[in-house]
Length: 394
Ligand SMILES: Nc1ncnc2c1ncn2[C@@H]1O[C@H](COP(=O)(O)OP(=O)(O)O)[C@@H](O)[C@H]1O
Ligand SMILES: [Mg+2]
Image 1 (cartoon, rainbow, N blue to C red):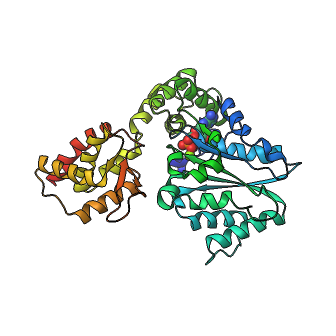
Image 2 (cartoon, rainbow, N blue to C red):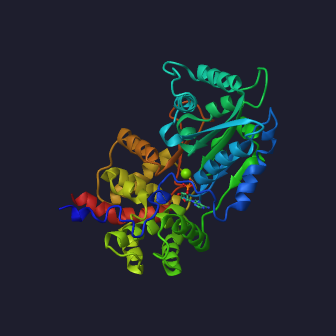
Image 3 (cartoon, helix red, strand yellow):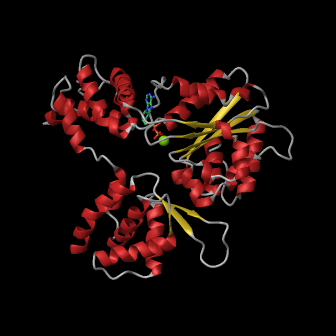
């Protein structure tokens, strides 16, 4: 009766499945020794009772930013355990786009029973400082994917965090690490940049095929039964993942191939397991967001993308004009400004576009500057050109 369940937990190929999990942080980050040393260099003063560090880490998706910083926080608190009590809080700003959400998350992570309801940002900061002073500890706050917070709410909360000890007794309450895919420095104001320190910017690059292979080997050794994989399998997964530069892809491919072998009842991963996994993997999440857009948001985005092939940014006014041109091309009646405005908002909320508002000009209607840092406008335009006719036919 239960024979169909036999393969669950048989462990023919997968010895430690958790090694392939999303939040698994390996003890060693393969090939990132120099980067780790650079990051550590930004925290040299931390051993002193009033020392604090700051860092801004940027790099493309899957370049290991989150893993780098999480590993650093763990290693750091162990390294200094005799000298200073170092705690850390990791906040992903995708789910915390306002100052108060960020502060609530920080305070609650440190003290799950803390009554944060109704407390303002100022009170949460005071509370945070008191908590750290009371048990004589130092806090490293990591704001991951911080561009979401900055675009939504500006950098005010960073400024407040960086000034937490000003006008008070004692110093060195907290360190701050910002992580982002894109250039964040241009989303920060001068006062924040100078407090973070311009030289504390750590840029990390995408992995190449060799980098991918080394990461795949480490996971295979840690997660798979000995003798179930060969170098050829590692070559295949790293070749397939290399164009993305995204380490997550190589890990997912290896895991997918291992599961296929396991399900087939084999105790050896074969090239066809990799090939089938490659085909079945969605290669780009961003294009899925594009596929589900309403027709007129697609028309608008197409106009914007065509212009972004030649220009860094497009203003909201230009976007409106470009949209009208595209509507004419596809013989559609253009929608009004309110609808277009709503579509622009949605495109930025889904991170397809990034909007920066001009704070210099005052008066009527503030101008937005739209750009596309996460994708290639020419790729998106090509995709839209095939999607739109099908969408309009419905
Ligand atoms: N140098 C490395 N050694 C081992 N694993 C790595 C390395 N770099 C990244 N990874 C793994 O690749 C995946 C993606 O890394 P992550 O830190 O989430 O990237 P990012 O935050 O830059 O998008 C994670 O599972 C991470 O553990
Ligand atoms: Mg990350």
